[in-house]
Image (cartoon, rainbow, N blue to C red; front, side):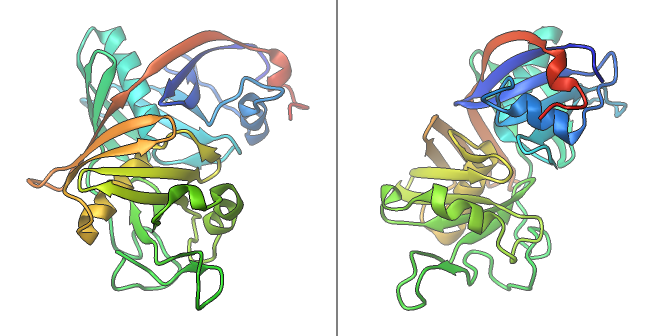
Length: 288
């Protein structure tokens, strides 16, 4: 693909996206082209590149394909789901839409600048996350950084919310350099598909402050699935109730782990930042 492409720039709490519309005409991008577009210095710049595609399943309004800035495809992105839901709802003049991702079908409801997404049910089995070896209890697995007798980070909760997450519980969020430990933990052998890494500090029984190292994207201002994973993991450990506000660097998300069916409801804002056309140079064979 060498012809210029129109795009939208959107964000959810600062977690930003380049959005391409392939519903009328197929868009096939190489890994190198995705990296070039995502590059913040020489490209458009984004955490994830999103491609909207048609879907043939009855009741599904759009398929959302998700690529991280490093060019790899991933299955879920909560902040992008809110943005695409708001975009499609506006086109349909409706307040409810259904989006399919590789992780499954998600229902969303739009209320002005806020979107609530049903992120479905979390998965806790070691083989579902997945982990490289069995763990009977995933509320806290054996994994640590630092000396054995005085680890810096240890015993993360692990859960899959469309993608794998590890949550390390800390007393002081600012005492840890996630930029330093994030790459090591993301790529730890215990995570065969790598993992999103979160540091979480419980502030109250309904509030948690977090920092997130996102798989394939690095430090991010917000990660919707990490917020969901943290809320669920905290409730499992008895650290909070099932309704919590997750404070991310980019702002808060409200998460409810619904008692009736164990579905996770994520509520937060979306924003359209602008639009443009991707230069042909970023789509050429030599794009980097």
